[in-house]
Length: 101
Image 1 (tube, one colour):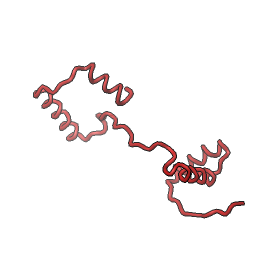
Image 2: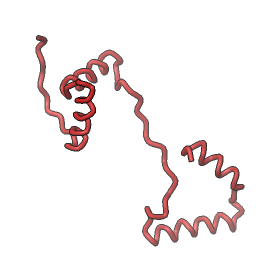
Image 3: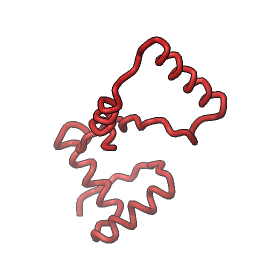
Image 4: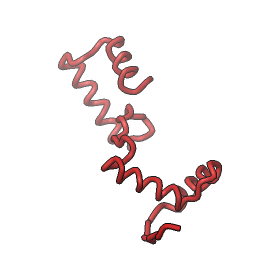
């Protein structure tokens, strides 16, 4: 058997448990999965999967405090006063393109 090395890793307990459940269904112990990941890092000279920030999602009413909501509404009213408006069709197309809505 190959020599192994132990190293501490801090992982959120819920994530570790969920990962172990998935890996268990695949018949792969967590330690083997970590080894697979590290081998791929070496082979690919980097993270072996695409990493990117999540797309920003449209703002939801429930995510605002009352003052924040009022400020956003005021910005919208000011945009209308200044003629910074867009046809509904253009907004819908942008939402489909950017957010899959």
